[in-house]
Image (cartoon, rainbow, N blue to C red):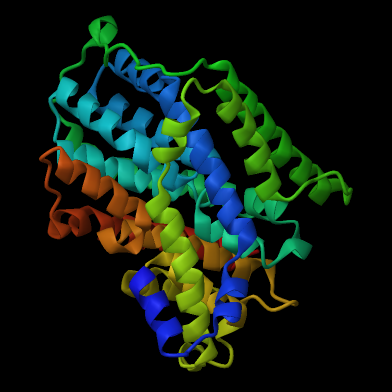
Length: 379
């Protein structure tokens, strides 16, 4: 992505000033703030305790799978799916080893969970936040929670029957199960304070949508304010900042430049039919399929100016969010969070073939497309 952005600058496809303006500062600040919060969660041992709790209360493989889906799905809605992918993959691998189940299967369960769980939250993934930044007049928090919560719950449920065979034969550890002592380089109170700030900020946005108030603050401010307790409470701020996922931040900055350059050519706009911006099913399915070619965040960055006009219907907004997100369940290349998880698995010697991922991902995605299409076409 960085190479493509540099090439557009060198060839004059986009000027340096236009490239600078193409980078969305709100998205960049939001990602930076959430990555800092995620690093704090990792450093205080919060997730290790969470996984130990899952392990302790899972009497069977079936319950283990349910707990992974629910826990990882809900955490991704609050801390963003890429964050949970980064800090959750090593812990799920340990969990799979302790229970004697397929590590590849556990990684696929993590992929599906963080992808699907992030759909109904405006801060669950970068593409959702990118979408909400273009339609502030629709009260995005209220819109996402009311329009996508129920279909997302059903979409999380549908993961269970398809992945259940991979969790058969698990050996429960009960109270003897322990992931290990969490490595804590900071106290837990900064993380709890950050969570309080995040939930308060989300609550203000919901209240704004319900009562048409002006109490809320921009989401990027919420993320940055939530990052302050982590930086203050960290014993080694420099190490914390160095451990952030700077590669993803570079990816997004470069993506904004490259996608703006591509958008200026008007090449991809011709792919959208005259009525494509009003057809919920077309936007939903298009989001799933086209995200396989350029990944979901670049897809949203490229197509949202053409799809999200000032008079766009709420159903189209939600279809764009749902389609571009569940695209990550179809193939590994459909979402950046998948790539993060697969790369971490590879570093631990666990190979997940594309054929195995698609064997479970294709039927899961087809069912989820049907669920979201039913709800969104009846809004």
